[in-house]
Image (cartoon, rainbow, N blue to C red):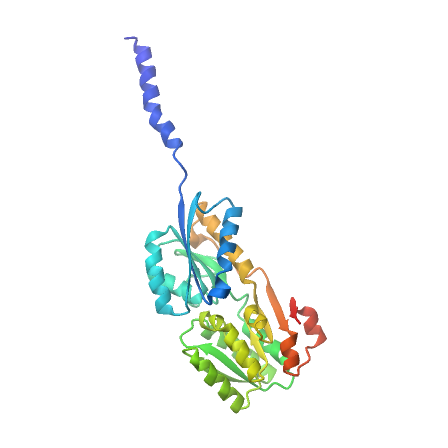
Length: 326
């Protein structure tokens, strides 16, 4: 046999596996999404995430498989759901502070993007916003540590004679410490006294509002979290029933009848989270991706509620509002 022909044929044979390997289909990523809160608010965010991923070339059923679900604002239940999801996915999206904290308990290795966490450093999800470290990055809910003080200030602008404000806060919510620090820094300058009302169950809301009305509380503000988010509509209804001006973090509460809110757009935050997912899918490590803050904060005002409470919204505040509900 011709030696040159033999060697050439051998090289062709040896090269065949390399060609075959290069033609293997691309990896299909399994992405789990667990968002915590009221289904009527959370469900619309799931297709936003899916569309945002698709816009970057990651299409469900083609090169990614999405496993999306919601969870009630119960830490034990969220953790149970995550323990069923985590072993079966390559990347996790965890919604809310409750979701982020539960995810940290369940896994310290799975790449994770959290969405809408009040203070990810304070609750131990990341080492710092600029350098998260570990397996997590995501989108913080608060643009700064002073946001709660600003919500209190907005209430004072509408009710200049405001002196006593009730603060609704869910027991055990990791957002409470940071929020209270912000409130307590702002209250003296606004000449406002704070009354705290701790919530364990939905039934506690009725009692809290009854006590506020009985004790002369003049307004109410709400610490954002999975529990208060899930009960946004009920909180708005009770505030209106008891004729208490209310300030919120979620625009959804104002749409439901609350007076005013200052907070991020959850739809836009979901798009931001999808952007971080794309970076990880393209090879970035979560611990090297800085935590992002909301792209913008919005003021929502419900004029119908203001009229029902006999209040006039100052014109400068109306001019600053992103949305006025008639």
